[in-house]
Length: 215
Length: 220
Image (cartoon, rainbow over all chains, first blue to last red; front, top):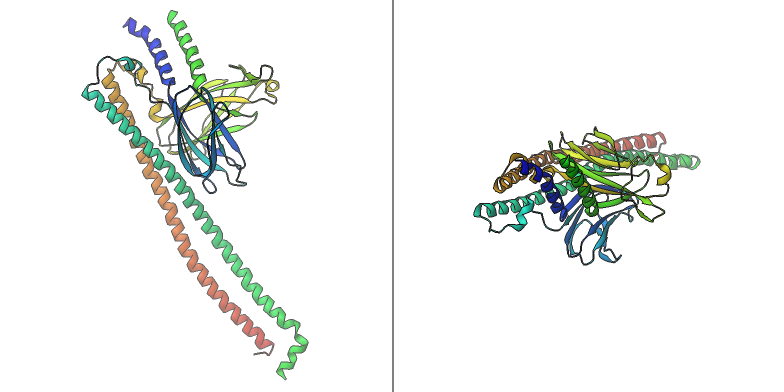
């Protein structure tokens, strides 16, 4: 019991350090018009990372994205993309930068989602990496279920984002239908009254000569 | 006493190691950065951040700066403020959602030392964990004394629970989407009918008005 209690902080320390070998960040942020936002992360050499991004709301639902390695070299550059996935294995140790740019747009601000996954998933308990026996059937079944559930959660995230994008378009359409209907009715009134007045003005100007048609 | 010192050492090591590996970005002095988290209800969100100030003399970022504060504000989908607190130069904020939808997490610096900050940048390391990622499995294993297999089962249960919550949330979102689409459909239908009627009425009015005008002018 005593040894277990003393081992707890050490266990926590090792687990946290173990968890730091890999990990990921997924964030959704708002990108104002004519703006660019950059994110940086320091990575070791030989690590595999994946950057997924998707535009959720705004304008034509597209954004520019580029990724630079620590030497300033552009390893990925795309313009006006709606969504993309970029996997890469790091060759240099240092700070990697990825930026999203909305500089081509003058009045639409965008909501961008990105998921930056680094490395592989750490084991659930830190001492699993140095086990001497093979996994039992039960344990390997659990690992399979865990990986399948991860796939389910990822696919749910994907559907949630697409649904958010579609809902944003539908609400946009709803608003536009209202405004254009009211606007068109007003234009209709203005044009019809204007036509009548214009026509009347043609005949009232020629009053001196129009009297001759009746004689 | 020894346990306390060990815990402090652990905390220091955690912060140092975590800071070297997290994602970071730069913000200006009065700039506010907002992040959106679309989550189902009863979901816990934990955010960790760490700030570093740019030092003009050494042309680098200082490892830690006391006196620097960050104000964290969290709003729920209805715009109501769920959390609005001032934290130090590094902090950890937690909240649990009670309504499903888009929660907005906003951070802006509230520096007490404006002179230091003049013309400077602030580097913010941020990490936001949602739902089942907030669980600390080694801690749970130690607290409930679970074997590896039991811990795995617990993790799978948590994951399945999160999937169920997300599915319920999806049903709620789909209903909203369907309402919006049906509203658009209704509006298009009624406005088309209304505009056709207005067009016909306007045409009739024009003809009658012009006919009476020409009759008055003795042209017809």
